[in-house]
Image 1 (spheres, helix red, strand yellow):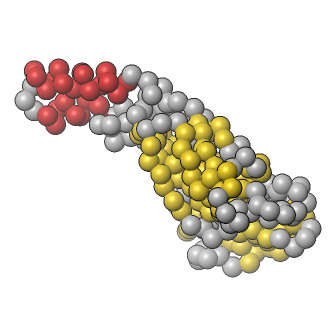
Image 2 (cartoon, helix red, strand yellow):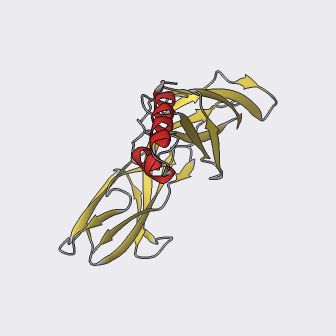
Image 3 (cartoon, helix red, strand yellow):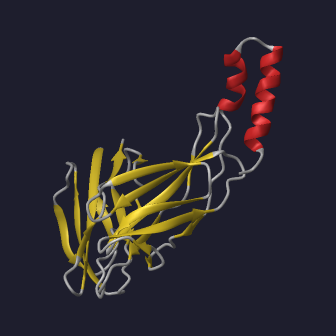
Length: 233
């Protein structure tokens, strides 16, 4: 870790000795923004084959990322894309071993934290497939929204939007998408068996909209994205 945490602590100690009001001292660091790190391993849209096998169903993989220029702690968020199970791991180092299920897709990211600061910074998000015995066909990774941004707000004058997404598959054999879209959550089916990863000119009016993508490959394997949301105010 960078010496930032030590210097910050020293500064706070000096301030404390000069001013008995601890809240004032803490407020000086509360707005500092930790820096964003770069994810290193497992790599994005890859098959992880370097884990240490623990059993027929589990292996241990070492996650790695770059050092934060500003920050003294990390939170690794790991999502099992097969069952949506979410785990978090806290550490002050730039790597951590984690036990994973074999033959399972995952999503992960790192949140950087700083002692005394209310601010955090999130890395980009990587997806990968943890290898398993006899893996010959891979389920597509869940689609990620490109536009609208999740939680994006449009002005009341907005009359239509373009739904744009992307999805990856280690087999590179994605053939179609089902799009769910509407004012309720979960949204109803809007368009089925699309070959393109976008729909243009979708009519909207004032309200909240939800949309979701089913990705399908040549072998019939399917993945379901999270439900994305945007508003027209």
